[in-house]
Image (cartoon, rainbow, N blue to C red):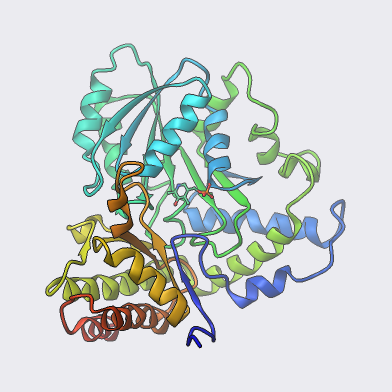
Length: 398
Ligand SMILES: *Cc1c(COP(=O)(O)O)cnc(C)c1O
């Protein structure tokens, strides 16, 4: 018999843990989509999404996952033949770049590897070299969920301004929104994309696109935009259905309303602080384990580590054994490594990730760390001592 009964913790970097409030809000009969409570509720959601993204810009909601939000953002401002500049620090930057390629864009990619944040200086050089102004947008991943690197988005804006380059600054905040500090307006971001299933604590299925005035201007200059992805009717709908290009994602909206209530009650800055404390506890434990065993954090510099996800390497055969053990014996699911090795390379199994985004608190993080510590003992995986104590000290130092 396994001990894995009881409430589990899905500690993968999305979908994240869903609050009871969100689940309860979704458990109801289908509402009228033409008038009444749902229509009124939708109007209340938009300003709260702006609050989370720290923007006065418009927000559009798509029935889509993050990949859909990627396509939605690009479809409004990138035409076939346009060039996008992509500083890449992991798999997700490549994913967004591939999406742009699919829409006919030329991609200029600057590779920064898998364990360091991007360097805005090199982006600045690329922009300076773009004498003909071919680059229409810079696609920046704020937190790359595969490597758990957090990038300095404001430094890109500074680089673009230093060159006086007119490209749009677009940020993928799918992993970071509601976890790592993100300031759309203050950082000069023109287009931000997010999705429901990470820091926003709602099931996968909603994609969000936020746009600055300048981005809206670029959209207006587009020769054509595919109808479904067009953000104009979603930003300024004449009829309710135009918010969503069709039937509303009714139950996701109820869930989202509940999660935004929770976010409002806690306050976005407090949420960032909580994620910071919880992440520091995880880092402290990982550092202690690493003192006496093969575990290493992918990102060495804490300044470049996300507060939402932590990518780790423990090597073979430990990685798969560890993940299987905690799943089967501790009610704990860890994320697989993503994009850390070439396709087909078995060493990829030596990587794994911890998701600590959204609805997480100190006892969950201590449970996560305790589950891993227990697996180390059960499986005889070498590790340094004092990890839980180090984590507890971080959490106690409020
Ligand atoms: C999860 C994630 C995506 C992809 O989202 P899907 O919902 O899986 O399509 C894209 N970018 C980042 C940074 C993510 O964390």
